[in-house]
Length: 485
Image (cartoon, rainbow, N blue to C red):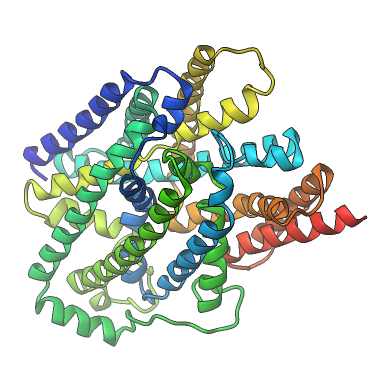
């Protein structure tokens, strides 16, 4: 990379921080800080949802899935489940979000089950989101390390550590000042840069690959890269039609229907119809995006031709790279033209600015702090929100540093963590929706559901798309049975 690329990257990051400072001038109340005054249009919310899903993990890991030995398009089966899950959310949950004035989705649980269930669900969300976004922060740092290392020749380990800390600090500053309003509008800009950057990278790939797109397609067919459906009845295979449709549906119902990180975006609108349109339209864009990213992975395979390496059939799946997450960053930093490379890397950095810190702060203040300190003024709660933002950012930095030596795909790591904890939360929401049991039944169901899904994760070979299904259904069934007892 050239100095021009670095200038673009630094300028973009500075602009993101400046946007946070500019929006910060209007963050005078907790309603404004957490919900942007409830005046964001549906199309901006839809773009924000897509940008949130198209994180650094998506941008880097999805092309790596198709690139790796044995990789193909079966990942899309999970995305089909995402679409079904969105329809279920629009029917079951979105009307409930606007049945009163709420700041977090977990306030709905208090109406049905009391403060204890609300606090437990919120605590699980804070834990899961902190871990998942620590992984996302690490991936962003890996890209910056590739950029800086290609210029300076510095050691990867020291650069990654410095980048995790540096990007984390930028993320904290941006979210601290700008609140949810800044997060949403920056994500709208980020989405345009993402789509433009991915398209530009695909065009360069097609031009630089011998034989162009047609050669890449032929090679992809020869290696089965375009294989889509797998109807195998196996709970241990990650991407099958059944795990994708069922697991993807339950995962989306949990992440988009009961996870404060995304539900908070719906609450920034003023009516349920706007929220439903934003959610459903985002699903169409997400499907098209994943198809595009997987096709980029096939073109990367045709560009690097790992199949020509000695021992390819038995060597590392991502050869010549250590992990599949490293393939696309290598192409971006080494083979894109000057200027374009910097712009694409800047877009990847922007994904780290799809910060969950504001949502974590909202959950802490609204669900855990305010019920205890009932007499606190709104101004005091706003100060506590700022403190919670800083603390959550520091913990995410620590998580990013702690998992930097892993070899598993970051996409699987992040989605696996989300699947573990979101299942019991979805289960208790279903208990409330179907009016099954009271507070004791909900707590028993969540406890058993979490215990079962943790056992499944660490003591069985069951694939992660089933974690949310198992956790939510266990919570629902145990909660319903305990209410009768």
